[in-house]
Amino acid sequence: MHEYSIVQSLIDSCEENAKANDATKVTKVIVKIGVMSGVEPDLLQTAFDTFKEETICHNAQFVINIQKVKILCNECQTTSELEKNEYCCPKCESTQLDILDGEEMYLMQLELE
Image: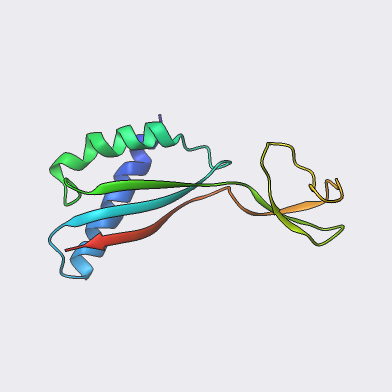
């Protein structure tokens, strides 16, 4: 389960940001997880809850925003979010696509005190 190593890196990043901003605690952590990132949101939540106890994040709220796959069709130049894992343009049904979002996980925001 690689979610544990992801959470460890996330908590390390939170601690670095808190230190850089002279904060003593993290109150909220907001992440964005793409549906194609390979990260399981439920497992990530469990891992965060498990590892946060002895850290600066011990009372932090953990918010996960799920990012659907966002594509650009190279045929009709339409930008769309895919509702299903069917990789074709919803407008023209082309499969000549560029994926713009939905493959990564990002730390989007921290609230510090």
